Length: 268
Ligand code: SF4
Image (tube, rainbow, N blue to C red; front, side, top):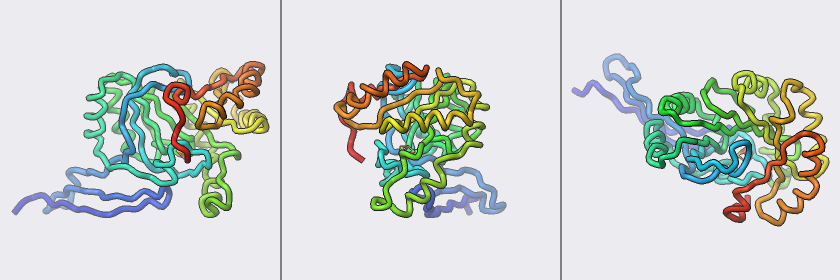
């Protein structure tokens, strides 16, 4: 009789709306778990040019997880949040695909990557293979993982979806979006970090000032303000007032270069 036993279980995560199958290989005699194929649900792995933040212009492999514990109304990757799609991949399969793309820089983004504890071994193995890792998160969950640039994009009050669009998610989003203890953990654990805020209207800038008062350890040169928009016209009109405001106060203005380079993002 084979000493191995395969167990397959359906799972559903109420936090993210994700679902999938977990396969475990157990020892038939002891019940010990020998292999665990529960892995990361991935929307896409591809090569592109980083369009936002300190590493703008760097050609990188992007690993985009699917699933998010928030529901920003302006989410530009709704296929990872409002309507999560993708395939569940083992860490070794993800590593293989990244390797085949042949780039040193890897951006792990989402969705919310911190939803997946398997990110810890994934980052460890990417570092061991000499990859430079940028981890993009909304800063609502902490994982003890290795990366070279921790990119935190806290979600302000301007991100909350309307009651009409999603009454239940509006409440959950509001409860989850602001986690000061997690933000402190992230910036304590990662000396190289950036804070990116999405700005929709001028009053949002004052919200950023209020937000940062609780984190005096964050220097303004680590803060980037990014216009909300998914097309060039919207971004250009917001740039007119946002860029000078940033420069006067020592913040970085963060254009969304990927829209300039590759055109309009899909509407959420
Ligand atoms: S946190 Fe990011 S992925 Fe999640 S809903 Fe907001 S913008 Fe989308």
